[in-house]
Structure formats: structure tokens, C-alpha cells
Image (cartoon, rainbow, N blue to C red; front, side, top):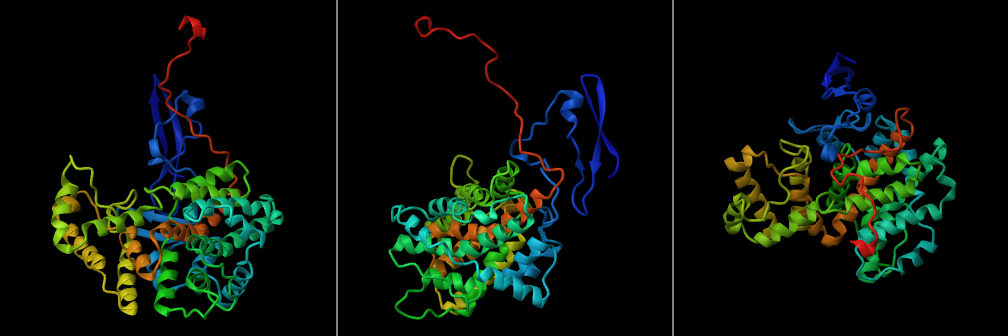
Length: 427
């Protein structure tokens, strides 16, 4: 704690403690503001509000820094595995070899779904969006796993966390299989977390599925890059739902619903669609001009970020991953060449530099996922799969936070003042 902040309102001055974290901006503790002044703060989108204390993820948007428990995202993506990052977010430290082996074994043995959930899928239309299916199936898990819904029991909380992390690849793969009319594949405990997901998604019972090492590595890296991202919209939704005492499966289902929005989890699909619309590098100047035109609704998708005012550190890793996947799969895609050229032009254009519109993680992730074979409808489902790790870690942290209260934002009311009811025949 540092100095106090003073606020003068209606001739009365009140003081509020200023709290300091381990790194990052100080925060003014305004919990007693309403009691002292009768006023609220007004902060649409909560862009200047710290809603909680958290030791999970730190972002410095101006410098392009993303840390998980103190480790830089680039280093984690290059050196670790998704299971290591999951353990790190849940437990606070990177695992030893023994701890990692035990954790991987635990997750592997929770990957199967209750058999009755297979019939649950058949209640959806074949053309249902995978995110609609995931919302329903994840929300329904609490009806099948009653032994891990007591949020006051640390053991049950951890079992629920492990189940959610383990079952999400199975749930996502089954959503895809259902949409293409292929049979569900059961998990294979001999495979890695990511390899198992690829097999359940693209394998068929009629023949063995060969996992391409470069694709497996790329998917694992994509999962790492999407594991957690501080108090974004979906994570805040999970915490808000959890603050009411809702069971963990319901909280994660709420996060999935929020992630579905095109401004959040659907951004990589929008970026890929934009690249397809541009088509070839020679058409880029036309679209650059449209992006600068205030009277044209077109905007460059995959550029700029709500938090990052510098190059998204995840995008650096993603660009390298695109090259590796395309080389390994011998993909010759004009969309990738268009993406590279568009990035080059935008990074050197004074308009985009001045507005700090740098490529973000979504700019390249859609290109990679498309090359691997995922339809655009699965992009957000993959995001949800990876982000589940961050959601459960944030949810666990919230449950044990002594400052946590049920979420209850206030408002600036602009409607009519009190008025009297007029009978319908007098109106």
C-alpha cells in the first residue's frame, strides 16, 4: 500500500487507499466510495477498473508483455507443453517431472464422457454451431458429475477442474464429428492431450490415425497461447457466475457463451474471412484504403487489441508457427501470402502505426487452423477448449479470495423519474 488518493465531491473530501501489486499500475481502493460520498464511478466496459486480485496472468499492453505466473508467453510457447502450462496456472509453479507425469495421468483418465451424453448430442440439429453444442453439453455436466459440484470442498473443486480440462477436447471433437455425420471416437490414453484431440477430431474407426508431429506441436502451441488472458470478457463472466455460488460446470458454460461473440472468440474466424475477401496480395492497397475511409464500414480484422497497444506477443509465436505448419504440410495458400504482405504494409503505414493497429493473435491463428483442416465454425470451439484451463484457474482463485463478493455492478440511471400508472382507457 502506498499513499492515499483524495477525492473532493460536493465540498467534502474523502481519502481512499492506493494498493500496489507486484508489477503494473497501482489501483485506488474505492470500496467505501458510495458510503462516503453517495456516488458511484462510471466505467463502461470496466476498462479502468480492477475487479479482483489475481496472481495468474499479467499483461502490459503498452510494452506487449504477457506473463503467466511470471513466465513470458513466448518462452512458454517455445519451451513447454500445454499440460505444463495448465499445471502452472492451476498450481502456481511449473511441475517437476514427477508432478507433470502424475498430472498428465490424471487428466488422461478423465477424458471419457458419460455414455449417455452421446445421446444428448443427437438432440441437436446436424448443422448446429459447435459452440451451441458445447454450451449445452458443458452446462449439462453438472447433471452427471454430482461428486464435484460442492464449491466449498477443495478436493471437489480440483476434481471438477481436472474433469473440465480433460473432457473439453472430447466434447469439442464430438461436436465436430456430429456436424459431419461421422461416428464419435473414444479417447486413446496412449496419446498426448493434443494428439488425442487431433485423433478424436480427424480419425475414423476404419483405419489408424497418424498424428503429424508438426501439427501436434502447432496445436499444442495454439492451446498455450490461448490458455489465459487476464480479466477478459469470458473470464470475467466465469468469475461473475462463480461469485453467485454456481457450480463450476455452469460457470464454464457461461464463459463459453460469452466467448462465442465475434468481438471475442470469433475474431480469428472474422480475420480469415477478411483474408479470403481480399484474395490476393495485389488487392491489399484497395482494402487498406477502405480501412482508412471513415465512411466505409470495412475494418481490418486481426489488427489492434483492446489491451495491447504494441505488437501482440502471441502473434510473434503464431507467425512462426504458420510457417512451420505450411512447410510441414506443403501447403501453398495465397491466403498466407496475403496475410504476410498485409502485415508488412500495415506495419509500415503511418496510419496504422499512429493508431497502434498491430497484428494480434487472431490474425494468424485462423490461417493455421484452416490449413490443419478445421472448418471456421470450429475456431471458437478450439479457443474455448484452450481457455478452459484459464477459466478453471481463475474460478479456483476467486473461490478462495477472502475479498470476493457476489458481483453486483451499479449503473447511471437515465430513465424516467417516478410516475403514476394511468389506466389503459385514459392513455
